Image 1 (tube, rainbow, N blue to C red):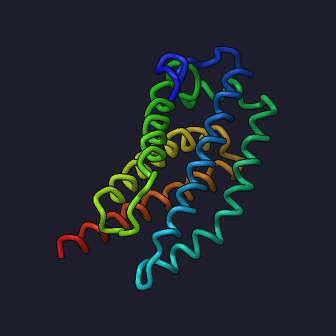
Image 2 (spheres, rainbow, N blue to C red):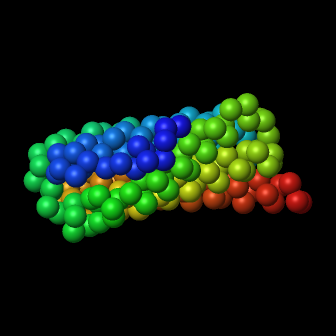
Length: 180
């Protein structure tokens, strides 16, 4: 899990801050990949299978967008702009802390999940994933403001929003199934 102080200790040089954002992008990509894979384990006939198929079809393009954003950050052309969109030092710390806290909770919660979508444990896991995605989207949304002429960040943000809404819908459906 790492200590809380090392987890949010940010590099103060522009290059170090870029590395921190690139590390986050790798973590966020991994989280989205895990969520997409996990959703298939719980796919049941009559559920949102067409939506999940569309998500599958979109995900390769999202994966490419992660690489494009990483590459664009490597140029250093956005170093001064990162501060303007609150993605440096103290401004970035709470965003990363919220993202990483919920990402850890998601990964811890997916161990030995029951196969039943109406399980409270499944809903808890989905809620952790939803919160981690929302935190990730806060960071990517700020990044997309800086990279406004560069579409990759917006592609990632939009996909994250789709994932958050999909998870929310699945949780709502699960709660309705359990109570009804």
